[in-house]
Image 1 (cartoon, rainbow over the protein chains, first blue to last red):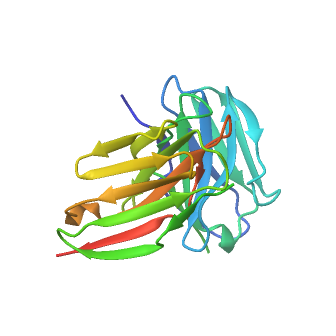
Image 2 (cartoon, rainbow over the protein chains, first blue to last red):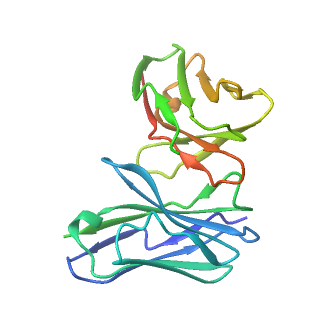
Length: 113
Length: 109
């Protein structure tokens, strides 16, 4: 079975540009999580969905960040406008339910110049 | 609430043992352990459920003491491939998994 799929794997953009990260969870998983990882702050949970509905977005740093899950097999995390401090690795993870083991995608390495 | 891991980092020689601790201020339902190698995604190692069980994965095992609200990960006869950052994730009741800050393990030849 395919694991969690994320695209792009690497993204380099200039400050002020819009960035869209994509995630396809494992088929049959009902919960999807977006994380950001940096050396300074470690692994931070940004937002998570259950059955395509956002449950908790308290980890989203600013209004510049938004996430959607239009269907069970696709989610996006958008940053508009992007800033250099947004540079990080963004992971998407899915889980059969809200509680339980999470399976991580390979991550998107974002660099904002 | 984020669990606390200790130590933050540990350096071993191949063949040595290490213990990584994870503690929470909340009553725990389960503890998960993940390992992340440099440049890769975190990978699930094992889950321990309420009941004080101990589990093993290769020469890596873990215990869960629900009364003390803590878990320990034991790495015995460490191998070079054990190097990475180890994260514990805890669940309390119906809350989502919350990860600790990680423990960086370096195994040298």
